[in-house]
Every structure is written in C-alpha cells, then in structure tokens.
Length: 324
Ligand code: GTR
Image (cartoon, rainbow, N blue to C red; front, side, top):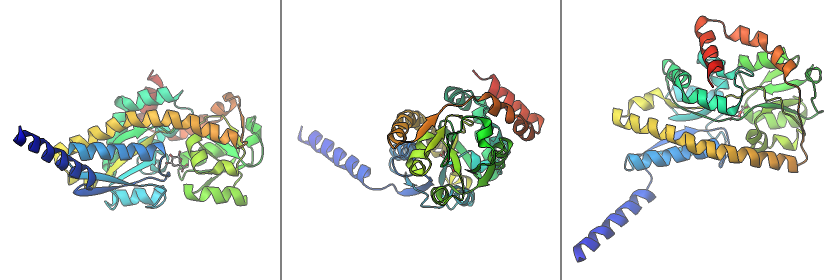
C-alpha cells in the first residue's frame, strides 16, 4: 500500500516536471501573425503533441508577429535550416515551388469546403511532396478563408470601380497578374508594411481574409471591404529539410502525424475567428458590400492560361476542379 502510493506520487511528480520543463530540443517556428491567431495557436498545439509523443525530447516555440522576419525572408531561412518550421501562405512560395501557383489561382476553389476536401486528398499530398526539391518538407495545409479587396477610398461595386486603383499584394507574380488583369495596379509588398502604406496613401487598398484584415488592424484605415472572394489560398506548414533529416524515421512519423492532427484544431479555431473578426470590423464601421463576381471571374481567364502553362499544371488544375 505504502509503496504503491509512493510510486504513484513519484510518477505524478515526474510527469509534472516533464510538463513544466521545456523540451530537450526546442525547435523554432515562424509566423507573421500575432499571438492568438489560429495559425499560431495550431502550431503551438502541434508542438504540444510533439512534446507529449516524444516524451519531452522535442518541443516547438512559435515566434509569432514576424519576430523572425517577413515571410519571404523566413522562407529562405527555413530552406537554409536557420528556422525549423514555418507557417506561411502559399502565395510567397509561388516563385519557389511552381505547383503552388495552381491553388493560388483566383476562383480555382468554389468554397472553403472544396479547398479542404482537395487539400486533404491526393492533390494536397502531391503538393506537399513538391516542397522537398526545395529543401523543405511540406507537413500540412491550414485554412486562410477567402481573400477579398478592401480599400480606403470607396465601395467597389463593379469591375469598373477597380480600374486604376493601387492594391498591395503578396510578393508573387500570380497575385500581381491577378490584380493587373482586373485593371487595377498591383504593388507587391511585405505584409508588415501594409498598415503604414494604407495610412500614408502609398496604396489605396489591399486584399485579405477577415482574420488578417482585423488582426493586422488594416480596418482602422481601410473602411471599405468588398466580398469578391477572389482567392481561397491555403496556408502551408513546412519544416526545414535539414532539421527534418536530423530526426529518426520514428520521430518523423510523430511530427507528420502531429502536424496533421493540428489541422483539425486549426479549422475549429479558424471558423470561430472568421466570425469574430467580421464582427469586430463591422462594429468599427467598415462598410461591407457584395459584388457580381462573374465579370471578375471572366477577367481572370488570361491569368489561368498564363499559369497553367504545362500539361502537369493543367492536370493539377483539372483535378482540383473535379474534386467534390
Ligand atoms: C495572410 C496569410 C499570411 C500572409 C498575409 C499577406 O492571409 O495568412 O501568411 O501571407 O496574408 O497577405 O501577406
């Protein structure tokens, strides 16, 4: 009786110590978003799973709020093995991993559900694998809702209204061509510079989903949000190939599974945050308007043609479109 109680106590104290102490090897993960954002929380959750499943040998620290730099730079650092994990939009990968251009194309996904089904299936697996040729290991896709235009000037109610307006875009040719094809002017720029560019009038607007529009505080200066929902671009969680190669095959399997498990958590957080963010911006007086998407979809045809330039990329697009 005495011994078994003591044993239990020792076990409990031991577990508490493992829980409290940081992992033996602490890996670093980059994110441009602030603490509490769904992507940041999902990677933290993955870190907890990894720590638990490796009995404290590995843990993950998320450097949120672009503490490790803007996305383009953190991608290079992840490829170089300086950063272990990176959660980034597919957009900044467009110039590095060509197949990521396909799910970044405007109006390629019909809905968030369509995006989720596609990325959970064989097309998603294929895209994750494509990162390996670029010193990265693709682990999972996260949500990023639908991107829409917002601006400081006026409600955009038709394609005509977009003409000549200056919009910040992600540093990707797909994004630049998309905005230019609508008759507007694209200004590629790092995410962290957008707030002041809106404030000083360097740009008229930008485009993003509800949680980004809200958490980056762009809604404080851009009061018009148009529900054109031109892109549903998945986020991707990658690991540096050199960090990955240091893991045993067993640990690699644990990491992969933990990343996959974090997707479920991410989706719950995402759905809740989208609603909350919309409420916050509406309460702050942002004017939201619908727009007929048909003329915009038609205007994007040359962009699809340009980027679906090989039989392989055409095939990926066809399989995305054929996914239920
Ligand atoms: C967000 C995305 C970020 C970043 C940002 C941007 O939706 O989550 O990773 O790419 O957009 O527009 O730069």
